[in-house]
Image (cartoon, rainbow, N blue to C red):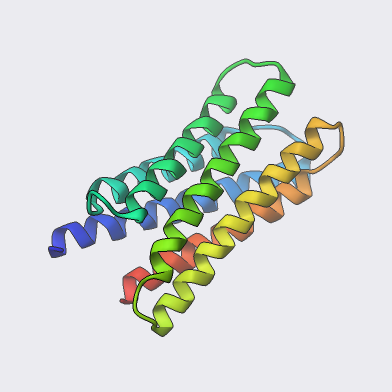
Length: 178
């Protein structure tokens, strides 16, 4: 793989990390203030979808990483759609659940490729980062499910967002180092 392609993939992962941080900040503000301003979440998920698209576009055609990134981008796009359209609250939350579960599925597929890589300390950290992203997305889906049932779950959503963000940062750092 050429340096240009590797740099573009690396750039994509840092864009994803920046997007997860923006979404986590939005979730934290929502939890602390009770306001439901989703502006930063729209920006964050747009960055995540863009970063996943950049990484997928530059990955080898038949890789699990490419497939995982594309599925994650679809999940981000689903969340974006739920945020920018005027939908019934129940339908909106169902889209958030599906979008976060798609992101988790894409992360699991990428995880599968990393497991097959030669053992190294950086791959161990990358696996941990990918695991955190999957867990974070799953927690966010659970939080939306609780909201669907009328329960308060903004704290759980913020927790999931930060777990995902920490995982994305670890993955980007490990790709930068290796």
